[in-house]
Length: 357
Image (cartoon, rainbow, N blue to C red; front, side, top):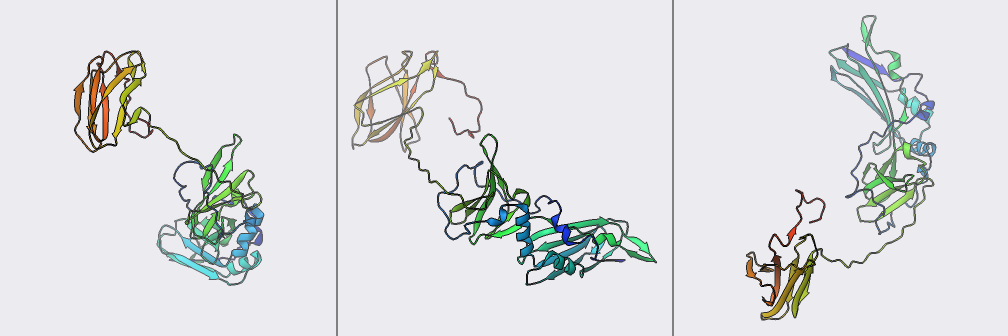
């Protein structure tokens, strides 16, 4: 059986462009690595569009999308349909909404079905020249038999074109895009939006937001942030950091005349240190070794290995007067205490995700 529809419903008017906007229909991209970033890239794009005046309100963004419209795509589908219906129209000059509606009324769709009891969906979208969907609407109905023929009611074509999104070209290849909004506590919340090629797809729900900006990163590593309230590019402040790190629980010494290490202990519990000794000379030499906890307990043994080595050797230690060889190169020493004198605190099972150890 063939069912057909001509899209010429009275509800398909220019006023349909002013209806409430549905959620964005495009998929979303993944935010850059990490959580809500507070800073944008320090590099500034000089080739991308510098202002986005169309994002300051929904009505202005909607107008921008209407002016981009150059294609209608319509379809008809249902379970049981064995050949889906499809139709489209294109144009090259800008059209008013009334002119777009008039073009839509010339669309005719038909499809073959083997089950006239199934719900039929009728869909139509308004796209730009790249095929990006800007507005869309749909209806659902069931066929009825009239005069021995199966037809769809005229209301099947009563499409309302809701504003889905605006496709905005930035003139530079985009890596990611997101809307960043500051909440009442001053925290920045990250909402990724879809981007592809040199375009971002801006959701109408976010147009005109206060205390928010759209951040766009480009494939060359640069970035721009645009204030949504006025569409203007935000000034960027470059922040620099220098580093002076240290390793926790590591004692690093170079050509030491003696090795004296104090280890913090509380009720016989603490952290056994790693002692890293570098001998920049070409020969080995001996030096004194005195390792003691803050509670006066000394190790009974010290383990050692070269930087490139994999085998540990040990040397027993006396209560005092210990001397130890320092080979040329880098050597690691790990002291061992009697468990009754000093031990490390029990550690919970960890998968290492905390980055601490």
